[in-house]
Image (cartoon, rainbow, N blue to C red; front, side, top):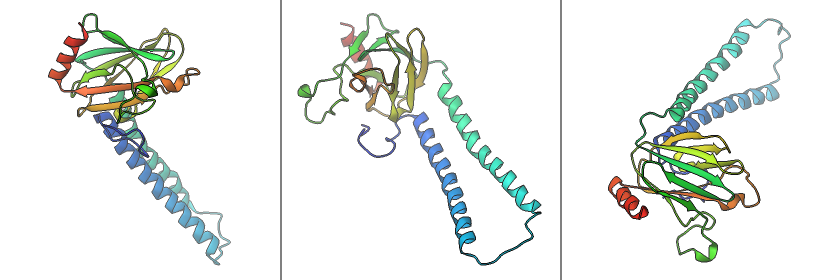
Length: 228
C-alpha cells in the first residue's frame, strides 16, 4: 500500500511510474552536474588573481558552450518523449472503466459489465476505523484486476476535475462535455490513493480517489457481488 504521507515520490506501482522515477533520477543527475560545474566556475573566477586581456577570440570555448547544451537537451528530450508516448499508448485494453467527476464525489461505471456502477464518497472522519487515512478513504473503492491493461475514460458532470493517482503515474483532466482517456497497469496488489488535482470548488479536497488492485479471480468475485 502506497503511503500518501511520505516525502517525495510514492513507491511506483505501475510500469509507467517506474519509468517516470527513472527519468526523474536521470534528469536530476544532469542538473546536479551542471550546477556543480557552474558553481566551480564561479568559485574559480571569484578567487583567482590571474587576468588575461586577450579575450576577443575564443572559438574553441564558443564551440563547446554551443554544442554541449544541445547534447544535454537531446539527452533529456529523448527519454522524455519515449515516456510521453508510453503514457499515451492505449492498445487492446482488457477492460474499460468510466470515471465521472461531480461536486464533490466520483462515479465509476464498469462498461464491460451489466448494471455495475456506483458513487464513491469520502468517508467522514467519525466513521473511520483504525488504520484508515483521514480525508482519503471512501465508502466504495474502485476495484480492478492487477497486471491487466485497464482503460480509464474520464469526464465531468459539472465543473473541471482531475483524476489522479500518484503511485500509478496517472493524472487525467475531467472536462464537462469531453471524454479523456488514459491507461494503467498495476504491477502488484494493493490500495492506492489519489485526490482530485483540479481546484473544483469549496469541497475540492473532499473527493478522494481510492483504487484497489486485486488478483483476477478476486475481481470476478467482487463484480458478481457488486452486480447483485
